[in-house]
Structure formats: C-alpha cells, structure tokens
Length: 443
Image (cartoon, rainbow, N blue to C red; front, side, top):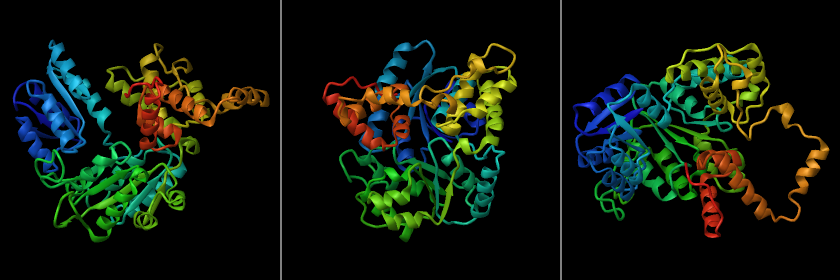
C-alpha cells in the first residue's frame, strides 16, 4: 500500500501518516496540490491520496480527471467541521477522516482501498498444489495468468508471487482494467506527454514505468479494449512502451501478471481477446479452485476472519461453535473467499453470546445453501411461469436492476455476479436511465 498525503508535515495529518506507516503503508508527503500533482505525474503517487481540507480538494480531483489519472482520494480535517466534510465528498472524495486521527479508522480506510496480504491461508490439498507451483515459478520473470471465479483470491496470488520473486524489494503495481473507463486506461497504463490531449498540462508517468524493476498486475485483463490489447502485446514483446502523444519509446523492465474471472481461451474463440496476447500471458497458468472445492479451508479461513475483524473492531475474539462450523462447511459459497470474509465480518458484529453461533450467520441474499437452493419441479414451473409474457430484454433488465440492488449499487460486484463486463453493465444502465427506469445509485 502506497499513500500520498497532501498537507502540512506537522500536526494531526502527520500523525495520520505515522499510523498508516505502522499499518504497513509506504507514505509520501506533499505540502501543496501543485507539489502533489508533480509527484503523481512522476508515477510515485501509489494507491491512495489523503488531502487536508485546508487545501482545495476540488482542484486536486479536477486535475486528476483532466489528466486522465485514476487515483482514489480521501479527505481529512478537524472533526467538528461538518461543512468541510460535506464539500469534500461533493467534490469527489471517497471518504472523510476526522482529525485527530483514529488508528482503527485509518486501518479500515486503508483496508477498504487495498489489501496488501502477501500470504495465503489454506489447509486444503488443492491449494497446497497451487502454492507449491507458485513457489517454483515465482523466482523467474515469466509472465503469469491467474484465473478463477470472483472472490477466489487472484490478486492475493499475484501479490504472493511478487513477494517470492527476485523483484520483491521493488514495486508491485496493480491496475484494474475493468474499473477504469476505456478512455482513461491507455494513459493510466502507458502515461502521456504534455499536450497529448486537453488537460494534459504536463508529462505523466504510467503504471508500466511506475512498476519498472518490479511487478505489474493487470487485473481483469479480459475487459481491455482490443486496441489496447495490441499496444500491450507490443510492450510485452519489445519491453518498451509509447506514452500517449510520445515520439520515442521508453524502455521498461517488468514482470507481468494478469488475472481474469473469464475463460480467456473461450474469449479468443469469440474474437474478443487476441490469441497472440493470450499466449504471451499464458506462460504459466494458475487456475484457483473455488471455495466449494476447498472444503478443508473453510474452518481455517473462518477463524482467521473472526480474529482479523474482532481486532479491527476492538472486540474480543470469540470461538466458532461446532454447529456453526458445520453450517459454514455445508454452504456452497458462490462468492468464494470474499463472501466468507464478509459473512464472518457480519457475524462478529452481530454475535452477543460467548461464541459465534448459527444465529449470527447471515448469508448474502443471492447466496443459498445447496440444500435450500434445490427446488422441486413444481417450484421451477412456478418460477418459469413468472417470465411468461415478458420479452428477453425485460427479463434481463429486471435481473440487472435486482442484482444491482442486492450489491447496494456496487457496479463492479454486480458485473461479477452477472458474468458481464463492467463496461457492458454501465452501457445498459445508461440506456435504462434514458428510458426513465429507476437505477440504483453507484456505491
């Protein structure tokens, strides 16, 4: 985790930086927005910017947008200044952190932005085989493709490989290809020269150069536009990149890891992913098994998450009752490890007894136990009857809106559950809005 703090290097915001550093973050300071933008353009901004509201939050966010830079921003200021907090959020800040800083709140914000875990927690034989192969492959510079269902830990695997590689002391830079709009992704990856487009007031270093000497993770690479796929292929082959608006190539030395929750071989057959790029990435392939195929990992992961979130929330760590473990073991976990993590987080907040009982376990609305999800033929007939008279487009619209409501407006989570790209989801939601449909707001 790399954090850029914008504000005076003294007082509460300095204390916030010290807390972040104690939680494992690498912290860089800038006293002004202008100085911060210079650091960001040079590729040293990291994963998150924290700005004191005595500075112009709106100016920072507008500058980032104009220069096609994707960087989450959180604001901070004195606790009683509610007007400043509201203005910061309206300007585009993701969160507002009151000062003086609270260590638990800083930890929660850092965790919400990024999780830098470099080790797997596992006990199942299927995961042992994956980790054994990862340990053998990690020291090389070979490109790696990591696939698996959403929530299986693909980014954790990428981080683990980096930590075991000869590049471990260098940068690990991650780019979510599905979360960044298409018109921003090229500049995010390759950087741009001054004047390359409206708003490009200065040269900006992209993620390839920021990761020079280290590892670059392209998360959900299957969502990358075919035009960018061609440029990425050249960067891999030639070990050099062209900044947007640049006139000469820039040499880079990186180890590339890509992830996808889609079958890329099938995407190649469908013509939406380049075959030559697929083979360049697929030197080593790790297919992470879903949690339902890792039964021996449910217990150890459940206990890990109980301990983790008990400490995070300042609560006593409670044991998990035997009947609760049996309940967790029998669940199908369509959301995989991420779903288990959220389930145990809820449990430690809800439980009032001396142990985690089944009453504290609340599965996601769309996630059902294998037994309860089994339906009789009569129920199937009743369900199918509800679709009679509707067009395919209407059924699709209902499914998308209902899934988005379940995900509390989170577009990325909804796209994963629906099995479509974030770009496709956004296009459909824009169409629905234009037709007057009430679309849940983004979260």
